[in-house]
Image (cartoon, rainbow, N blue to C red; front, side, top):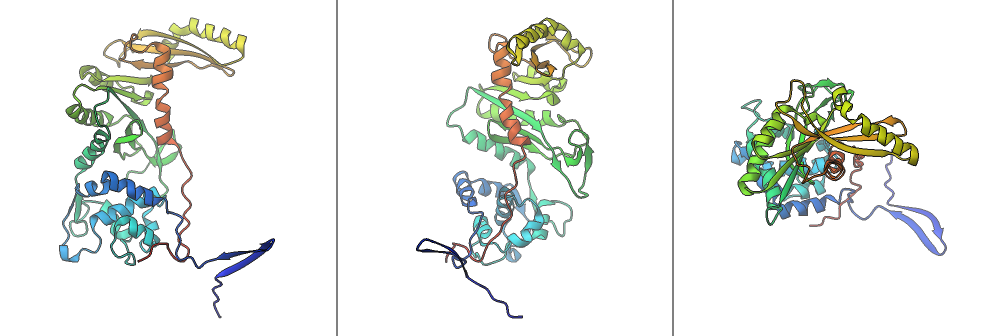
Length: 374
């Protein structure tokens, strides 16, 4: 059969003007915003510095895809929403991705899914995996980028810790079902300072949310203190990180903390009067009411000492909603209401960044040509 390629389509005229769709503009991409990411990378030199964390043991004369090109291809692909390695069977012929990766010849194919897979699965086979990386160097790089973003040492650094889920749909290694997320998933740990990522660990989901977090805290705090010896550091997290080993280490190393605390009968008992007051306020105004208080508290067995607990006796239309946080910060520095509303609730921005589920970018690809020209 004859195959016709119509290049223009006419539509209803607009008064005396023709309305026509044409497909003669060359190859056009819907991912042009990635050029901004490329400029940001050039500004901070992230990919160039990340490449230094890798060791390439391949024969120099047989290298087709350089490490930096493959890193750029994979990282920019994820940023554009193409997180699956299978996506690169099409992306490897994409001129825009070639531009982002730094490929000199934009017409040459990029690395395919199998090559990128060998880059990521380091150390499985001496024959096929000849590119190694230093996890410690990559960890240091994330903190170095944060340090370099400040022309001078800040007075205070708040480190936010949180875990979230990465859903799994196949039979990946260390695949476990997580009851809270009601799915098979991984449970990565993230550590942020404002909007900058300082640490991340990919973990299986068959463990406590705080598992391994103390080691990451010690590493990051040590690197921060090396550059900023006098900086005040505060750890902030939800009740999943309210663990004795973390709080005890903070108290022994001049690091403050502010953690959510799961309510129980012993915690609720001291705030009964506050809860009644909050109920009366709610009934008189018809609006949610909060009454703040604080007290010294120690668990029956898991805590090594008494600690300051701030309580929020909240009464809503649906009834009681008591909440608690535990902290090493003093009342003089942070009164109860300000501690909760201004400092603890501010972690919501970071939590939304980690746990939010924005729609993935549409995987629309190239039309016929690109605006890239030789």
